[in-house]
Length: 544
Image (cartoon, rainbow, N blue to C red):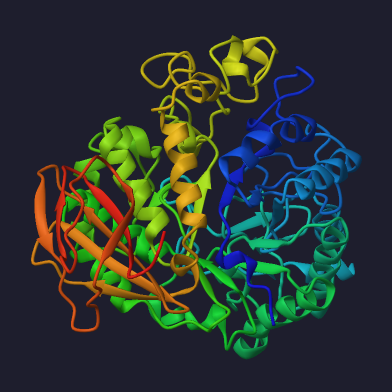
């Protein structure tokens, strides 16, 4: 029997560099992260996803790697990493790490050898052309920032492919030697105890762009090879793919249960924000209905925000404008023409009820929920910072110097801590909220605890319940003869709904989570009052 632990996980994403600084140099480190593990364990986190912590010139937040087998010396040592892993394991927290193998840094020794010697074996690790490429502006990852996906290298006398910044040359994943390097990298970190990998830029790993004689099927098989390797080395190891693709391409990543176990649910994420903007449930309902079926071992990872922009590229231009108008009306809040560079609390105007609704929705959706550092205390953003850095400010631990992140002088910090306004560390921090039983932090702990008592949400079959109220999203998840029901009012006006489904007729709904005090439901009643932005979770025909 396979241990599908990831179906019950609470995933928490963080960047070591901005989480906690232990040595006072202004940069977060593994010793600091280790000291804050009790915070994460107390929150109910069961799996950490670490953003890249490898040696890097940091052109792209560490996603330009120049050594896959070490820790950025600013963040600590391999010994610090091993001790962190030991302490996390003691607290029942698994760790997955970013695997960035679509590209390397242009400072990586492979690329340096490739550009300096045409006969080097590393020349074939990358994608080159001797002629000026056509359509070089197509498929740029960062419109308005990046002008081309090809860059001429004077030393090499050729153009190299880079889907992201020019400092990030793409690897040739059709090359068997590159695939062997990928296996070595995974094997190294699995030996150090990680439970799997978040596969960065997964669609580009299996695209043949610029690769002569590449066979599509062989490129796609890379995902199966990675899964096979991880399963052999770590029976419970997982692969989580970043693949923001149309729904018809989703099966490519899950395969027949022999490729990725998990995918970020970019499609539903965008539907959720459209629903929140309209205060109508239809986009979520339609989004869930149109998601492709996935293998029994497959899982969606649901999220609201992460370390990048909120991308809306799977929506129409008109739908994008609706979301911009609701949550990012100023152009400084928008990025790349189809994204939002804000954290969730400012997007929702700092309104606690609206924020609770959004997170209640996240934790009740079928799949595995993902939180990002600072979500638990309602951190804001700093729009004065460049591009996506606006949502990457350091964690706010206390109302002391630099929000308790570091004792370094302010000018030495890796990024400025938010220090002014309603989201400044004096008002928004973990220590203050720990002392307040009504704080967002304590509410997040509570919803995580409830979620952990409801494996139906991570493992069960989901069904939509009709209500005849456009603003209300109601659904149920069933697993092993148990059923959880969740009802969410996306509007700012209270309402009362009656649940309708020919396949759903419980004798009694037992309330287990709610936004406010409600009168108990009568037996056999499916009529449910909801407050403004109200939410209620129930168990059907079972004890709490």
